[in-house]
Structure formats: structure tokens, C-alpha cells
Length: 477
Image (tube, rainbow, N blue to C red):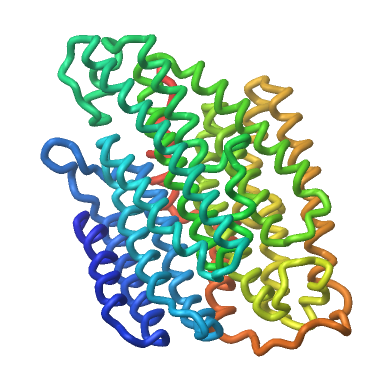
């Protein structure tokens, strides 16, 4: 079953490559996405034991990220049927193949405990998504593509140096060289402290650039702004979580080496800095897709702060993986519909979306309410857990900066979103062929309902997985 997670999307990539019809490929994409989701749910119900040698092990942390990624991919695949029907002027072969290869690599990230293999799979997600950002074939999209490829690749290369340092730390310690997480945790007290510190710095910077933590976020506004809506959804709601899972693996190792305070403080600083940067650049943002990019910078900051605080905030960080990932799907898919209808991303031209597109405009507005941490949606639960934990633990400055940033970001997003969806459609607005359909409205609406349900009720099996994940990240005296 673990092999099926990897092989099924790869088989799908071959099938979509062989299909000659641009109309049929999104259907094939959806079929394989449905199959992957089915395998994922089966693995959550009956999880196999670790593989021989410990290379593959689907633990609670991997389950959370795998579930979030598979669910989001499924809805994006369904959405592609309607969306790509409006984009028949361009071949979607590369888009469908790239998405499926990315899903295969993403699955590998979630199930492997070998840090070297994790690095290879994470870099594969970067490479497979790169040509998808260039889907619109214009000057701005090619610039965004190169920014994404270069910055993320440099970041992941720095993470590779960190892995080299970890491996060398085992050699200095005189233990058997290994990059298996379980082996490193077992021998953690023997590892060279200096080399371990150096490894943690490079791993944090490397995986942090993939997440988009400030000041390593500069690729996000261009990549999210120029890519199609479903690609932006996978970047913001899928790949970000994979990079965060990589940091969680580093966090586990930090716990074992007793160097956790150093790593936690760095996470809190980078997380708060990301939130502050997002608050600054989100004010009066004229491009609503770039606004969503800065919202992503904010939310990776929230996850970093939560992980850095430790304790009960870790549960908030893990729940935020699901809450943020699914809500980003709502926003990017509905914003893609608005973009298609107005043929513009500028708030100077996009007005009165509720009148022109009642469904997409309404979903986008609800997504804005959800992503800003308003009840009764899921992000409220995770953000409240984090900020309450900060004050309970006496981290008053962290809690205050956290709340101030959230308030400024709410105002900044509102100044962009409310004029977009309210009011009258401009008389000079371009008339396009786009109309809301079940294929383009159903997926973001389905994701929105899930975000709402998770805000009022967390199913017992999911709660168990979240609690098991938090237990793996507890600081033991």
C-alpha cells in the first residue's frame, strides 16, 4: 500500500502523457487523484508497520501531511476539469503530468524516514512544479518560474549541506554513518555538538526557504501570482506542508540531541518576522493573487511560531497544517474563477464579484473570513490554540506580536477583498466567456465545507492522529 502511494501517480503521469485529448487528460488526472485518496484513507485506517531497515514508516506526522495533500490534490484535480475547459488554447499535457509527478514525490516525503531520500523527494516536487508556473507563457510567468526554481533550489541545496554535516557528525562520534531518522535519534547523545548545530542552521534555512519563511519568501509573490489557480493551491496548501514536515523531522532530532531551545528560538524569531513582513506588504495590495502569497507567508510564520513555542502550541501547528492547506485551496481556486471572469488580477478592475459571480465571489469572501482566523472555521481553532499557549506559558511579547500582526493582516486583507466582492461591476469591465459551473464551483465549495466542519467538530480518528503527532514532538525532561 505504501508503494501504491508512489506508483499510482507515476502510472497516471504515463497515462496522461499518452492521452492525445486536452479534454480527457483532466478526467484521467481526477481518476488517479481519487485512487490516491482512496489509498491514503486505507493507510490511515490500517497503517502498515515500518519497512525492513526503517526507510519507510508512515507515522502520525506523515499521516497529517499526507491526508492534507491528498485531499487538496483531489479537489484541485476535479477543479481542473472545468478550469482547463476554458484554457483549451494551451496544451495541458505538461500541467497534468507535472501535478501527478509532484503528488508521487509528495507521498514519498510523507512516508520516508531517511533524510537523504526525503531531500530527493522534496527537490523533485520543486522541479515538477516549475514548468507549471509557466503555464500562461508570458514574460511575468517566466520570471516567476526562474525565481521559484533558483531560490527554492538554492534553499534545498543548503539543506543538503546540513545533511552532510549531520552525516559527518556521526563519523566524528564514531557511530555507524546513517541518515535514517531513527538511527540519528538513537545515537543523538553521541553526536558532535558543533557539527549538529551547524547542520540545524543549514536545515532551517534550507527548508525554511522552501516553506517561504521571511526573509526567504521572495519567490512566493511572483510564483503564486503568475501560476494558474490550481497550481497556486498546490504550492500554498501542499508543498508548504511538505517543507514543514521536513522541519518537523529536524525538530524530532533536536529533541533527541537536547538542542531544542536553540532551534525553538530560531523558529519563533523567523515566524514572527514572517508575520510582520506579511502585515507590511499586504496593506493596499492591488494584485489579489499576490495578496494570497503574502497570506501564505503569514501562515508559515504561524506554524513556525507554534512549533517554536512547543507544548500545547504544537497541537495548533499540526492542526494548522490541515486548516491552512484546505483554506488555501478555497481561496486559490475561487480566485482563479474570478481571474478568468474579469481577465485581470488587479483590484482596480475587479469589483462587484458577488454580482458577477455570486458563487465564486461568495466562496472567496468566506475563504477570506476563514483564513484570517475568524470563527467558526478551522484556522480559528489552530490560531487560538497557539496564541493562548503563548500567554499561558508566559511568552507575553510573542503573544502580543502575534495578535498585533493578525490584526494588521486582517485589516490589510479586508481593504483588498471587500472592494473586490462588494459594490457594482465596473462599466468598462471586460466581458469574458467564463461562467461559474459545478466543476469550477464544487471543489472550492467542498473544501470550504470541510474547513467549516473542522472548525466545529474534529472527528475522533483525526484527533487521535493529531494527538499522536503532538506526542512525537513533546519535550521530555
